[in-house]
Amino acid sequence: MRADARRNYERLLTEAGAAFAERGTEASLEDIAKAAGVGVGTLYRHFPTRQDLIVAVLHDRFEAMAAVARDLTCDDPGRALREWLLAQLRHITATRGLTAELVVAVNNPESPLYGSCEALVSTSSGLLAAAKDAGVVRPDLTHADLATVVHGIAWSCESDPVRQERLIDLFLEGVLV
Amino acid sequence: MRADARRNYERLLTEAGAAFAERGTEASLEDIAKAAGVGVGTLYRHFPTRQDLIVAVLHDRFEAMAAVARDLTCDDPGRALREWLLAQLRHITATRGLTAELVVAVNNPESPLYGSCEALVSTSSGLLAAAKDAGVVRPDLTHADLATVVHGIAWSCESDPVRQERLIDLFLEGVLV
DNA sequence: AAATATACGGAGGCCGCCTCCGGTTATGCA
DNA sequence: TGCATAACCGGAGGCGGCCTCCGTATATTT
Image (cartoon, rainbow over all chains, first blue to last red; front, top):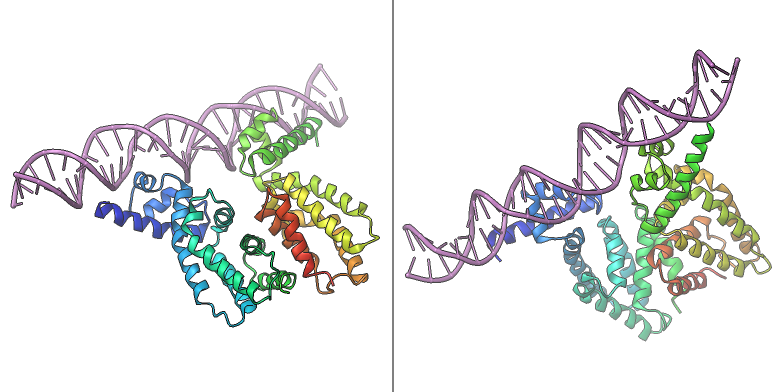
């Protein structure tokens, strides 16, 4: 990949992230190209589809999330799980407008993101497994359950952290043994 | 209101309902107008905003929902509540594409729908109150909690009734006393 | 039947999407 | 260093959807 191509690629990614956060996933691609100091053609060559651009932006963020999960202390697995769910909520809320793509990715193995976030999924599953081993969580709970719940809550009250936390706790009460 | 105006209004409503169900809330308004055998101008006069059209379509459906809630037998309030949540899920899933507007309406008193669905809200609250009186549900549970959970689930697994039911039960286990 | 209020419709301006290809630039090789 | 060429850039342009505006048509009233 040529040096200028790589530079433009990164710039587009940066501006797209900003635009999506500010104006949602429907932000004008032409504006994003302009903000990156690049023609539309260049944008479309790197990211043939709006979806591709979104996926590329999210890829980085998934890695950040996975890092958070790894750092969670596991002394109290139930507590760690709660923290993890809340951390996800904060993160999703911070990248608002991308929520919809996230949940699609997590639930759908066909999604290009599904593969690119394996680290996230496996780390998250690790937390869940630890909680199960400690016997603090129903054994039939799956990672998919967690993902669905988190994203459902994130979407339902995107801008109300208090309600988010309340709903997480309602959920956990049904799930902690 | 003139007779022809009323006729066009109804036709637009019908076609809009069909289009939204089939192609989502982003369906082309010009197509809807064409399907209703009407010019765009007419559509925009009746519904100045896409939002207005969506709201009008939903208004009817809210009434149908309220009727369902009223018919639920209350012998076992806990069970009635569960049935009610599942009925909402089915209904929301059937009108897919409108989910987003629904949750906005239920949570936001500013929404034009909020007023128009008072019947729904109060009937639903009635079911919840009955469950509380019977002592089968946490007393701090609110109607808003229910609405948020239902819509979160509806959105998270729009096309997977099995998962929907599973999540409802997970939720209820944390909430039934 | 005429007068008037009401409603219709679609042309047109605007904007965002996406493609296409003539021009530009980086890079490898002599 | 200078050239050849493969890789890349950019934006004009066609398309379609959004929404407004106003000349025309139709229902209603008297």
